[in-house]
Length: 174
Image 1 (cartoon, rainbow, N blue to C red):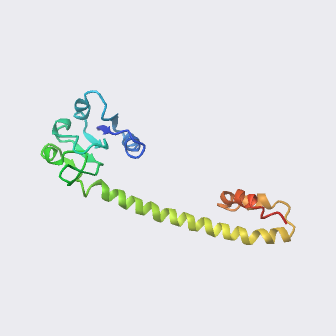
Image 2: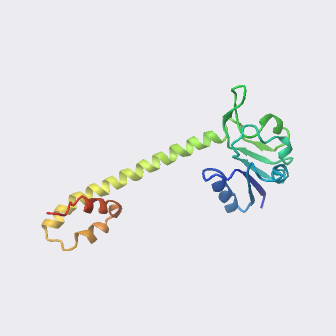
Image 3: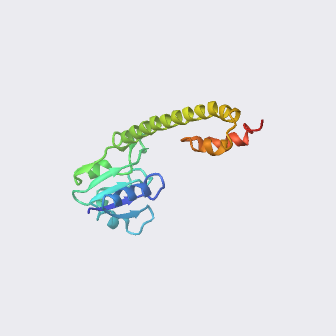
């Protein structure tokens, strides 16, 4: 596969990106701002992902001719202009593709955050429905003489998640 270098070792971007690239059969090197001879390491990359945390740190001399550069950063430079971790102007003529800042990775981040928020809300709603079903069933089970209310409740999807809280609140203490 392609040789990829991820500059940044954070749990938010660097490490997950390295794993994603590995899953796509890239040969991955994880580097950071303290890596010895970072220019030499970065300039080997067919795919360079930069999440280093320093505005405009990566210039054209860090980048291989024809590389794909993904700039994950968003900062303000000394003039107050929004910029990334890659010096876009110095690299644009050397790379085959580069993400702009603003307008590159940030847009995808927002799209995925929104997608995950909707998914999370759907999951919460599903758990609420299951909890409501359980709360309606428990008194019926108790009144009908169900011997093992706890096991029966745990058999209902997503109820186990709530069950310990309900026991702690002594709902079953008649």
